[in-house]
Length: 482
Ligand SMILES: Cc1cc2nc3c(=O)[nH]c(=O)nc-3n(C[C@H](O)[C@H](O)[C@H](O)COP(=O)(O)O)c2cc1C
Ligand code: SF4
Picture 1: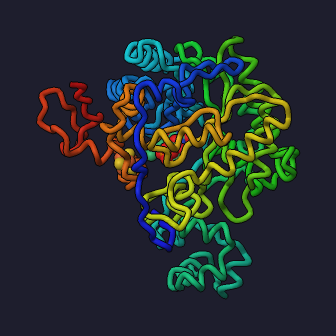
Picture 2 (picture 1 turned 180 degrees about the vertical axis):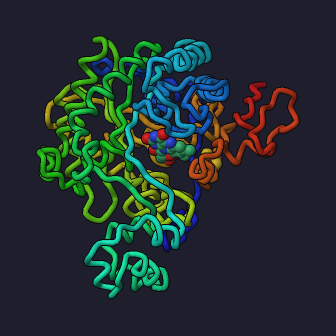
């Protein structure tokens, strides 16, 4: 995983914790009522994939236990992990692409309602993504997968395709990069990755025709399962964020100028809105900046967010970065992972950082975007996440007008009781996230996500469930309230 070259080790906050009375009077623990979105308090657990679904994308007992554990802290809202909208094999990623998934998903809703005493609102993040393939073995790619064109055969002065392949195998990477087209060289060194601009592919060309209905059906299923709403995944490296990105140069009216890049995400939002009931919440997660060369800027994001707000979206949750374009090249046999480059660092910053540090990296951009929404006359609530682990940080973000709701992802993973501890004036008992990204390393390998802070605690308790390697708790240890 990429780290800023400055390698400065930062410290988590040591500010005093509030008393129960001060917490009760705070902004964080005050309710928010904004259109359809009504939360008992302004705390939010953003989507985090824990890799606990079956290989068919079904909910397991482990998935249910994972969300029940978050709900015990009674945050204002929880967003269930990125869940695939299509009915296609996608490994152990949760899916919502068919009605058969509804009963399993309803189990999560039931568990969260019960554990939070009905206090926590529950949303599900729905996602579409394009195909990626593992990085191929070099010789296999050159001998079997690479298309040998007449021009390439001539360039290496070969009499046949087979001869051209053998000449290419004998070349070093610099020679290959000079000879192969940019896309072929990328397929060799980073693995094949589809793009929204691959207009020669009918299924890519047709995305504006197909995706709105696919998302709308998924949202309808989420409503049938009992969720309070959906979060459309318009962030990071996935299909909708790629439409919004300034790198989207499609010439069919869905790329190029930013109003065109916005078109499919907006049409999809409208299709979803039409498919669900009047009270069902429909929000989105989007990037405040792509954080890659040539990508969308905070001005683009302010435009997109204001247009979503004007179209009646119920909330906008802001993330940043997390792109494929600057991700590290995977090893042969592995797939590229979008959180391994500088933009990935912006998305999930670690404790070892640059001068700015890992906390509040999205605050400035969120402030601008929220101000643009307010200037367009909309009161749409903004959620911001990124390194928030202390009550004082959350209060400041709310006081400064950077956000209306505060996302705690890794901090909630490290200690799901954070909310209850701080609410009760027992913030000193919080287990503070170390921002080590041990959890993220597991996510990258599609292994059951756990936190390094849990692993040492009471492994021999009778009811402790361990991950398949037998060394890690699958859930945060219980808070001893005595
Ligand atoms: C293990 C893990 C899985 C994640 N999965 C998702 C996801 O499914 N969807 C998403 O939008 N963000 C995902 N994220 C990003 C978080 O929601 C959040 O934006 C990021 O961790 C920064 O917030 P934090 O500093 O509070 O952790 C994930 C993060 C982690 C650590
Ligand atoms: S493993 Fe735990 S302590 Fe480390 S970053 Fe993840 S949540 Fe924080």
